Image (cartoon, rainbow, N blue to C red; front, side):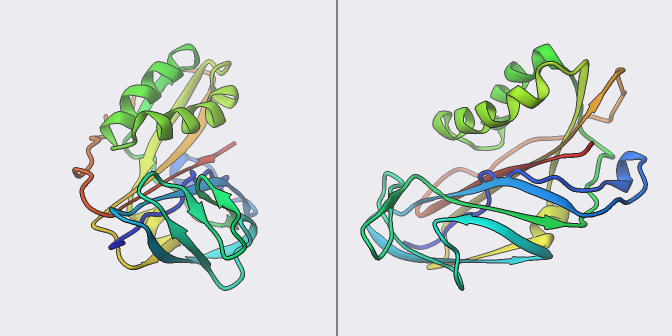
Length: 209
């Protein structure tokens, strides 16, 4: 294995957000970041997370990091022989997310929007499906959702180390907020590198109430 990705799963995080016009609040929960590992051949991989906050839940157990054997199809096996689809964690943080660019999407259009956006951000169909079925129930009945995919502000607050290092690392993190009315946001550009070699993928999110 040469490199890996993080959070994802998923990760999904709840944080306070002054950039959205709100005053900072108490820390809230990062929800379901998940990490997928896709080496070119079976590889022993170690993943550690440096979180600017507190880790509150992880599966498999985190300890001082995750050590798994990863297969090319993404199956992860721990030292006891238990298998996993991905590495999962949740935590708390006081991170302020950036809503200076993004999208305002009608609740009823959220599924179609996410299908298109996640493809542009490099998730495959299975990863995007797992992302959408987690978040859609919370978003589809809102009048609108303000959505902004985070870059450095997220990766700086949840630093991921993968050994061996991946050739391709995708970290997709969505900050979003329900809105009763349409908000005109400058559109955010979405892109992703080509997935080559040992690929690590992470997705997560933050619901800002």
